[in-house]
Image (tube, rainbow, N blue to C red; front, side, top):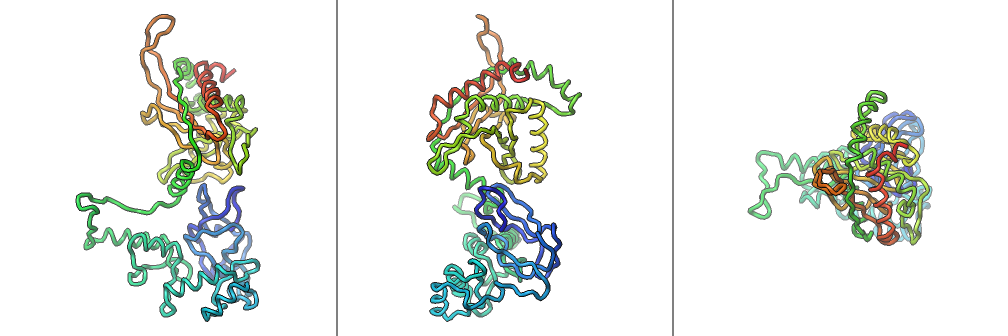
Length: 423
């Protein structure tokens, strides 16, 4: 399993593009892996024959662990033909006690060494699946079947994994097909409620759920709110938008001005541009702002690097590029990594204000609401003015209310005096 990012510790194999016995060329997509951020296509480093797949679709694998062998047609495969002597003492005792054939156990230790967990896994699989007519099914698929109330031993689930092994996706596909069958009527639970659909979380949606649960459970949030006047910003954008569209071919938005304001405020208040890690309060020097983008399968946050050094037009170009890639599923790992702060905007949906959940490992996130108009006193007279509500969620372990308040106030000042953003 390749290490595809500095923080990656494991990856879930989403799909194998090749099966055992297939010819593989260097640079050809071999499999897809879901990291803690996004699904990535992994290319083969070498050419040859895919001799053996050790890890199936749906399995979560630690980085650097061997998941398959590519070699010549008759080349010996270490883990396909394990050496009986390459086994840990504890695993050896388990093998002897269970009268196991160690040649059938896949070793995942160094150099294919059979370790305790390998022996235990083998014992569990033979215990649950039986030696006779053994069913090939991944642990994750087995767990999914149990959660969905499917008896994988008696129900005919077609496995599409290596050697006909049943994957999690196979179980879900079987469940959905079974539920849609005319003769199958699902009894509503409870009796007065009808369930329209039911499915396990997967892909990006599952990652978002896990990260947000972690954030709310482990990060003490403090939420600060401010109302910023945007009348001058509206006037400035109206003056510039046609010229920018004609010269650069892009549509500049209020979000672009907000990103520039946030970037400047972060540079001036670097305490907010930070993280809390292993008891350390770490302040970043690079201002890399993530922009939350909603996708059909969940939420993703591409990064605009060194945002404080970019002009508003350059920020607009990058935002448009990243959102386009996000919706086409073409973001690279680099483009969704190393963000130091996040901005999320729900103004286009008529949301006036909301309290965002911090995107770990960052220490703060800014929520942007809709632009609205209400009466205000200006120079002693009542007149209609436009406003925008901003909410800042901070990790209260390292960011005090005063620090967050100064940062948020600075953003409001820049938005209310937008000429400062283009000087």
